[in-house]
Amino acid sequence: MDEILATFRPDLFAGKRALISGGTSGIGLCLAKAFARLGAEVITTGPSRARLEPARADENAKTVRFEQLDVWNRKAVDAFVGALDRLDALVNAAGVAKPEKECDEDGFLDVMDVNLNSVMRLSMAARPLLARSKGAIVNFASMLSYIADDSVPAYCASVVIPTLVSLGRPCPGFYWLLRSRRKAWDRHCGCPGND
Image (tube, rainbow, N blue to C red; front, side, top):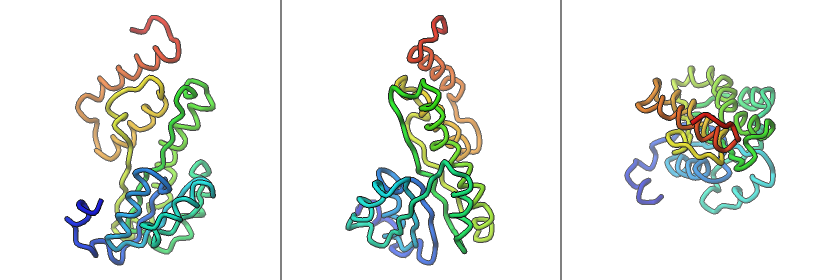
């Protein structure tokens, strides 16, 4: 990360505040550390104390503020964001996959709620603050927004829409993507005859 961050001015985000969902691990945590190193005040969220504590212990994240937030809960999201007096960037990086459990309704809905619905919840809650600061929303997804993996059909479906919203229009190959996902879903979830 040092090599990448060295290409930016060290105070690029000085005086700016970023809120990053899913910032206790993976891409979200890397983004939180990067924003902080470039001068931003960073607030990042995670779903539980068990996820927050290891992230707080990261030596490279000492200036990051870690907060527990249930992104499944609209009232909790509204209250959390509503308590902020300003915001310059919202980064939607929360994500979950449940291999082999996504063909069950509970698993499917849980994945969609975190990966897709939380993007809407957080974006709508942050919109007034971002409008005031002329800030930005950045939606993260994964390569599975472009290719299908039949072990995580809900995950694949849930990351397409934030990707399209970020692009502002359907990307080339979008219709192929939907067709390939349907085939993967059919194979994995046992829907015969849909080749």
